[in-house]
Length: 326
Image (tube, rainbow, N blue to C red):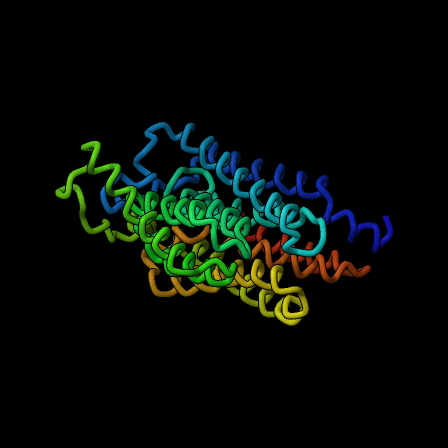
């Protein structure tokens, strides 16, 4: 296969499916080998956190993989519907799954990280749908309702509420009515749960700030931390490399890409300042970083661009092996 044809193939659905198959196979191999460390702690404000929802390890695996697939499909829809990358490519889907599989303990169990990622990508999709439509207060309400509802079982969603408000500003929908809709969306989950007696004021508590690494040895922590660090560097680096091209886009596409970059940089900062809960941010970090990688190589479909793509894939395969053998 010629170099140019190979570079084009790497953006196809076939290659994305191949990477997804490799990632899922690796995840299942780690699961069957028992290389899964249950995550401790309760991170909810009033409801049990997702790592306590399912007692069956098998169902936890199935739901987690299904949610990763859901996130991937939503990002595909976002790109197709809103032309965020200005090109049809599936590379970011495969890269996302390879990044996810590099930390088998996280992709193979249901926990707050994958729930938070799924909800925030859903909010992003809804946010993009209201660009330039300040009368879309129902969707603004829905965005903040979903985020606030999820915060009841995973407190880290609270940190993303200001970002979603900035997103409304970027989408040119922020006015008094939409702001009130956002506030109402944040309060409504409490009204519903307290009104139906599902929770009481006594159920509200500080999250359990026990580190997710509490059940891990330093030997097990090192590969996970290294994987996250590599993804942070890749995400930020490729985001900066894409910046000049993004500035040349029209205002709508700049707003879309700007919000994805905002999610990435905010997640990187939250990982740094909330290190004990680092793993909660990993799926969203992977999603945003994979999007930036896909954007970069979409803009540079040269004859030799396949080299950079394979280097990234090999890095994550090496990180996966380190996580498995540690």
